[in-house]
Length: 357
Image 1 (cartoon, helix red, strand yellow):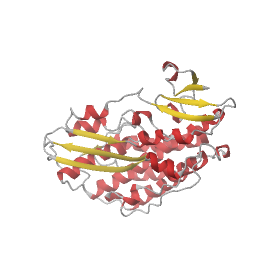
Image 2 (spheres, helix red, strand yellow):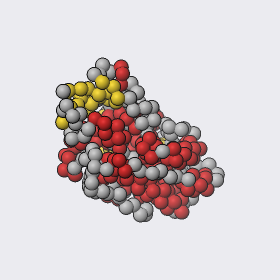
Image 3 (tube, one colour):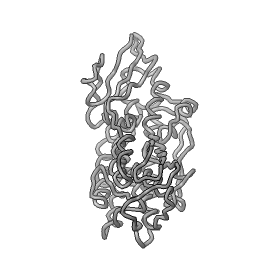
Image 4 (cartoon, helix red, strand yellow):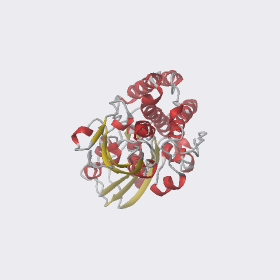
């Protein structure tokens, strides 16, 4: 028997055979995608194929007709839970091509804001699984991010050469108070042993981030290719080997705790000084190409920038974590019962805008 299951709030409009509506707060509602499942009579999945392409953002083509300042306003929209990290990846590409030296205070603030963004993103995925206490912590972190940037979801706080402006007076103390309230809730033990992704399969599909680390892929760019703001931080990647739904949730929980610790280190080491550079009216990257990458909440977020020396990019290609990660469902779901599908997908964090970039 073959069925096509629509996942997400818009699934009923995709012409699927059977709809599993997992609710507006469930991670799988971050955009609509389809799973074509082959199911035995005992409702065990024997084959799975993720079908994407329903949420095209057209981000890469939109970048090519905007100057570099304008690109940053769009760079946070394909993964709306990693907005600050996405802005940063694009800003880094332009800075490296033009040889800019970003001020030390901006470097540390960027690391700090990336970790706050990571906490907020992970808690969004943990809330449906571990309860309201995770949502309360997320709201506290989102409040201080909003206070600093003026944006609740699309922060638009990075600038080429640093940040738009400095953080407000008293913000450091409010950040300490906010992260002190972060709690991930209680992990449901029913996730043990289901939706297993092997290390070999994770490597074959290029899976990164907490999903990859839950399967034993020991890669974390904060340690392995650190940005300047991370070089003095004590980053200890959270790696597990079980590869099941429980391991993925535990990785999210432990990474939240680590990010809280890294936020405190950033606050203790925050230097004074400016947070941006004075720029010319028009920014032109020299002819050539550069690749930059950051450790976004869901994995490696990369930017390949190719320039012909103009004020707009000739090509700006995104390497998004969800695009690689979602393809691993074809290796992860066979052997899973249909009844366990919501729990397995809940542990498998993807943002569909990041897939259909």
